[in-house]
Structure formats: C-alpha cells, structure tokens
Length: 102
Image (cartoon, rainbow, N blue to C red):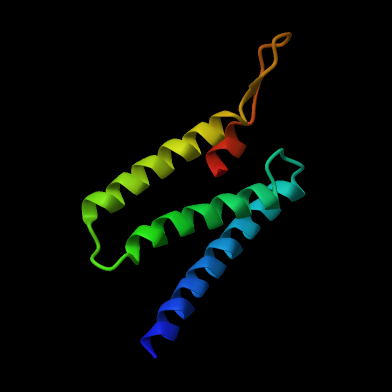
C-alpha cells in the first residue's frame, strides 16, 4: 500500500508543478511574450522531476540534493539568459521579465 502512496504523492507533485507552469505560461501567453505555456510547463515539470528523483532515492543525502539544486539553478539561468535579446540598432533590451519568470 505504501507503493501506491509513494506514486500518488509523486503524481500529485508533478501535477502541481505542471499547474504552476501552466498558470505562469498562460499569463505570459496572454501578454504575447516569447516564452509561454509550453516553455513554463516543461521547465516546471523538469525541475520537479529533478528534485524528486534525488529526494526519493531512499536515504536522502543533503549533499546530493544540494548538487542537484545547484545544477538546476545553473541550467535555468542559462535558459533564461537565452531569452534576453538586445537590439543593435536602438540598444533596447527585451526579455528580462520573461527570463525572470523562467
């Protein structure tokens, strides 16, 4: 029975991450921004999966969880940086709030 509870909790966490990603992405999509529902949903599901994969590996090692979070934050920072665009003609910068939402 504990087997079902474990997978039920994992499914609930993934669903909540997906829901949060959809809500953020829907807001960005309504305002016609570059990263929308699909991007935010994938980032949320990927982040939740990465954290859960190390958290449910039996004995939780805080150092291993720290390494996963460090890699996740670095990867999301790299992804967010790719959204920022600077126009060469007017020197305007676009995509800062989209980068922050990712």
